[in-house]
Amino acid sequence: MFDIIHKKKIFFAIPVAIILIGIICFIAFGGFNLDIDFAGGTEMLIDTKAEFNKDEVTQMVTDTLGFAPNSVQQSLIQPTEVTIKTKTLSTEEAEKLWNAFKTKYNLEDADRLSTNSVSPTVGGELAQSAVLASIITVLLMLVYISFRFEFLSGVSAVVALAHDTLIILSFYAIFRLPVNTNFIACILTILGYSINNTIVVFDRIRENWKYARRERFSEVANRSIWQTMTRSINTAFTTLVTIVCLYIFGVDAIREFALALIVGMVSGTYSSIFIAAPFWDLIRGKQKADKSGKKAKA
Image 1 (cartoon, one colour):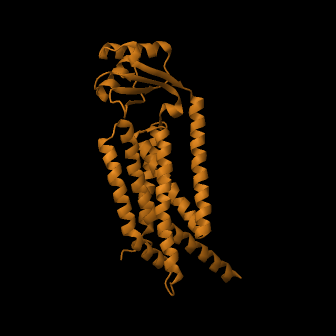
Image 2 (tube, helix red, strand yellow):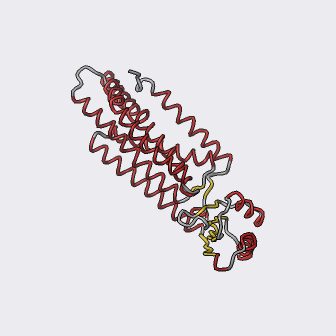
Image 3 (cartoon, rainbow, N blue to C red):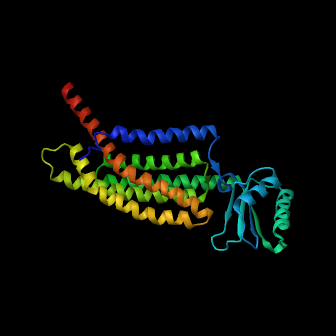
């Protein structure tokens, strides 16, 4: 049986490398690619009355305004409707863009369904609410797991959740995906999925530890991980099949969300197996070493 616990440094190093790449990209690109949900901007919804090519629309917007849009999305319900999100446009710029669509697709004024502006203040409030929701979620999970198992297991679970969040953030930074409300939904979904897997592993460790006699905690933890490995992989696989289908057959807005979920599901499964329990063993070992050192000094 492969010893995951004693090889934990290798499994810790892999996500650290990914996170470092994410930090480098974050600095190099000057931050995340914030959608207008957070940065503020203009959102225009137009019914083109015909099938359209996303790349052609993006190029037309770029040629008309002189800069690329934040995103161009096809409606899930009505495939001929397109949503263009850009930085804040003046009235003249908005009219110029509408006239370009009007000419290209032979549209009438009624086909311009809406033009909305989102202020940076609203985006800032949304970002604060998202951060607050994530913090409250993590704290409640820490309390629950500490109560059900022990405080060190709660700390380990929080470290695993921090791993998943940082991996998602790195993914968004590296591939310049727009950070919007879908991002918030993705983070909260992954946190819930990941903690569920982690609790299953911790529960098996607790059950095995009750009947362990001369085994070390690392041996019990390693055996428990392998006993839950099939369950973790099967759960991840069946979930990923559904999400991959959404990515393949969904429209652009769904595909971006599905792609982030795929990365998050893989990250959540990885942290449940290779981060949470090994980190628990690490801090238990350090705690025992500190206690032994204090006794020796006494």
